[in-house]
Length: 193
Image 1: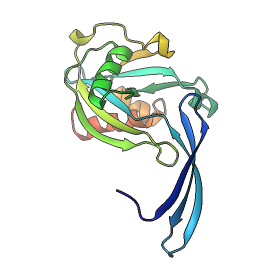
Image 2: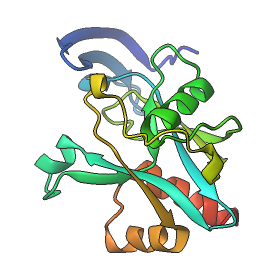
Image 3: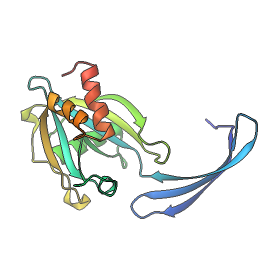
Image 4: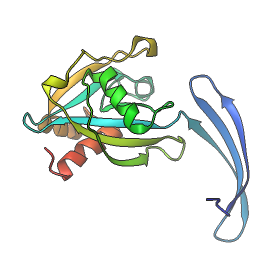
């Protein structure tokens, strides 16, 4: 669907090193009926998927911990971030992607996932839509140590935490990742744990 309030959209690539940073310029029709020229930068890294594994009997969740350079330069002293498993779709559909990422990062092989929603995480500057999933896990599903892929420079620690501890970690600031907070709160709101 074309937005009639936007015209003359132009894109200029500023960087195509890790992902693509675009400079966008366009004219936007304001409520006053005036065309204003706008320039913005948008980071395009593709779309992604994230999942929270949970165990009803144990009342536990599986999370990961890894170094995240952007958090480090923004005041996270260690740069380590506790997160739900996630990854970029690349050429996969969201469900296939998250099953593959779950096995690579956590070592759990899952077959049944439930998509709960999708959303933009930082729409002012990033094009990415993230597809959110949940799935139950059991010890029998653990087929490897996980930890990510060396060729993707991943060094991921797998954490199994009681849900109450994970929820407390939101309050204390030990968990600061938005997608993880959203998934944990979803489990609580829907009384899954």
